[in-house]
Amino acid sequence: MRKGVLELCILSIIAEKDAYASEIIDKLKEAKLIIVEGTLYPLLTRLKNDGMTSYRWEESKSGPPRKYFQITDIGRKVLSELKSGWQELAVAVEKITG
Image (tube, rainbow, N blue to C red):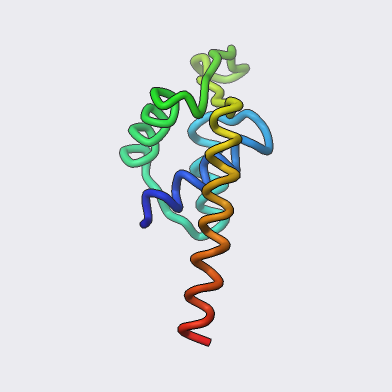
């Protein structure tokens, strides 16, 4: 279940604007979802391999080039499905826990 939630969160973050890994981690930390690079990078790779994201390299003013991830049309469709599933789950849990 956690993996699906992380996918939902990551796709939501990059749907707002293109982001590189450190930005994604910072956004997740702000929301109290602690994730390490060792968890994030394999997820980003899988999302890319599944056609949900793509990336581009961009020069950085301070340090090496950064890999910016962006959501694809497939990713937007999956994000919509994940949001819908999340809403259904939240309603079901609320009914039970009341």
